Image (cartoon, rainbow, N blue to C red; front, side):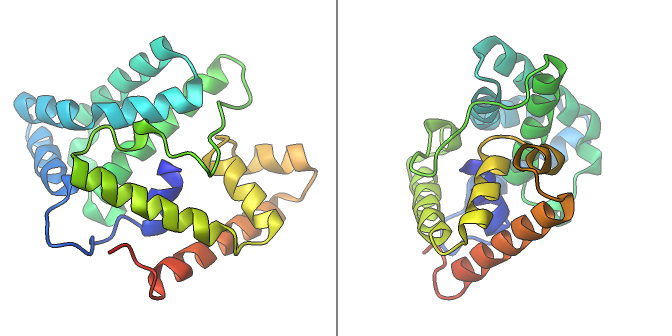
Length: 206
C-alpha cells in the first residue's frame, strides 16, 4: 500500500497547515549531498523504519531487510547530490530506493516474488518513521485509495495489486498472466490515472 500511496498522491503538497516529514528529510538530504555525516545520521534515525519496513515486506526476511536498509543509506550517501525534488519528495525517493534494492536482492536469491500485502492492510512499516499526525495522514490517504480501487476494472486492480503488493515487474506479470506486455503496461497506466483522478477530484486527503 505504501508504494501505491506514494505513486497515487505523487507526494505533492499536503493539504494541511503543519509541516510534513519530507520538509526535514529534504534538508538532511541536502546536508548529505554536502558530505555532512550528521545529516545522514538524522535522516537514518527518522526514516530507516520506513525503509526497513518496505524491504521486509518484499523480502520476508529480517536479516535481508536489515542489509537492504544499510545498502539504501550507503547509496544515499553516494548519490544524494543527484537528488532533485522534481523526481519526487524525499520519502518517495527513499521508498523507491528501498523497493529497488529489495527486489534486486529478491531476484538474486532466485525468488520470483515477495510477500504480498492486501488492500485491507496498511502495515506499521508504512508509518513507523512518522509522528502520530503524519501516520494518521497517510492512513487516511490509504483508506481513500482502497476505496478508489473499487472503481477500477478487475483487470486493472489485479495488475496494480501484483505490481505494488507482489513486487512483480511488468514482464513478470505478462508472463504469469499470459498477456501481452503492452496490455499490462496500458492497464496499469490507465488504472493509476483513474486513481489519481479520483484522489484529485474533490477527494483529496484533508
